[in-house]
Image (tube, rainbow, N blue to C red; front, top):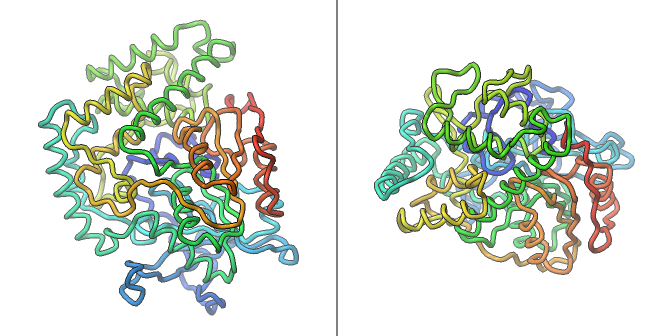
Length: 499
């Protein structure tokens, strides 16, 4: 769903499903629920027509900032829902978990639904902005402080020390502007919010779909509330059992695999504008040019594209994937014609305005990515480089890791423990550049015998809606609780990569 609702058509806004480095604000998107006049329903949520999309209902739900103090200060979660198209066939609510961290579930619902007609007929489709995101108390920092951010790639102990000092200043600034919520934005707290939403919706048990980073909150929910699960689709999973090095190395291997698949397609398919040329040599040439500060994006001559930001091409354009456009972009960067659908420069730039949002703080509270020194960082980087000779590393998590140095961790990595009786459906693509297939396979193993793994033999990030096969299997499970046979695989759709 996240994959289908995030496109490249409007340019490279780095809001990928996994770990966006961009501080582009989403809090200024459509403000929902203005002038709500409907009385609160039985769960305590006052629903009213969303300001920008009257066919969608928007509402708010207050939850404790600190769940260990249920009577303490609260934060209002922003919610949105599309009601079941056929009330007589309605099963209940389907709560969706947006990716990120930092993606808005409200924005997902305001767009046309990515779910099948049958799912829309049988369920109220509900989502929310997780705590610390967009309309639900976004993690907010001063742009003047955030814009002091060092370069994401460290090359010395002095760079490491600079990051430690910067993080201390940024964290103090963000905590001051965000308030006490800043210390309670991890996915375990989001899981508790999910249960509050379930109860407020009047559902005895939870039916949920989550993609990418949204699966982490679902995993935490399965641990914390195992007997309140009706059905749970975990699409393209985070693996919360990996240490910092294993996390980065597995991500590097995945993004290299995605690049390898792109190169193989271009070699065999004459429609690729680089067909017959040495794609790896061209990529190396562009990276070397970026290393020298000599690579400029067409139409953007004010600032060169760094090698770190150039690597984003290998992530975002393989998440769809959109190999045809990727080939055209590489050709344009080498002086060739600029395609009409040329995206904007990849990566993140300085924050404009007075404030910047910092959703990476969520990742830092969920994953202990701390390293003792530059020497330790360099060891992780070497290990990533070894498995990614073309891509070097995955710029999403590697760029976020410096931001997490010195940050408190509330929900550290651990193996999952699920003791519920409801079956769970785990889905994954064989060639996912952002959440490796091995992560989902490992999550399914950790969840135990009640979990079933659905493998899509193709490419891309997020498999719901990818093909008729993946959608049908997930729909059947959500609607009738029918799990697929063990070892179920959906064949690759070779046309997907040409979209």
